[in-house]
Image (cartoon, rainbow, N blue to C red; front, side, top):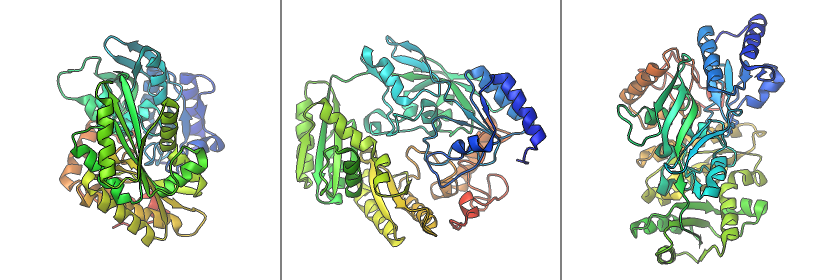
Length: 490
């Protein structure tokens, strides 16, 4: 985008303040700094404006303004994304949805709720919890991330193994298309006719438009929950236990693996009761009917012991269960105890490849002179190697980026994918050829153009530049990490 002149900026600001009211537009550089990155702080870019609409009609008016002026725009929730997905990489407009955070409707009989995109994920479960319901998708950042962001990235979480990812819980969407048109995709019923445009929109990473109302399924709380902690002296034993549990016909609600470095960080931060000397721990949760729950737990314990677990114990009460989960869900924050910065990777592999891939992850990171902590959704093979580094040390960021690319390539080579739940964003756009052919990418690009022909809606995301894939995308542009001298194209 051609940089906006001061005169044009002032004129646009006045127009946006007329649309939204006072206190709803930021344009001072110091204020914009807060929005220069998401949770992946390797990539930073300043918007020209950050705006705070309160209604779908205001979002539509802003998008129409951006379309008229040829200004790029990107929606943003809590900024907890980890792939640079809401980065204003070409400047323009950041549309913050944090003031659109209401639960608009709850229909307990039909088990649905209608919410706004800025609603924090966990707040929906809090809202419907007193009536015995909850919202199943639970990213580890659910205390802060928004449901709109979950829609953009088709987020998963610890309970994906049994309950699926976000798209499995979305029935309908009110969206603002990139030309400002307001329309509904799907609705409140579970069997819509025609193309599954809701399924297409969920996971499109904000490149098809902006969701302004979301119809989600809510579930009855299970009768019983059993949470088990299994402790291993070797990582490969824990990896084998994951497959062994599934092979016995059990489908836990969650199976999370935590390695030793992460255990130490969590224990230093929260004292959750994980054994510091363990090489790895599995946090396994069963839920469902009370009848048969103890028998299932005994089978889980037996599978873990058969794979070499030195200790397996169930949480004695709800307080201990919550403490165990606090450690898992707060692990990313706990890394601050052991490193000034880290980069969260997000790859998926077949469960049976866990021992091999975890070994390769350690080899790759060590070869770059770095450390890694692993805490991830082992049950569905969604890895999160967290590469620790110090951005103040020259060359260290470049080694992190190079190691991350190698890890994702290994994931692809064993039949996996380069993202399980964080999205492609800016971070992994040039890695898409690891898993997609040029024909695949060209097809996806044509779909994007049907929704977003002018390319103003969250530009620069998902698709590789021309040098990586000559059939799609705009003219070649260096990836931001190339511009920073952090990596070379390969």
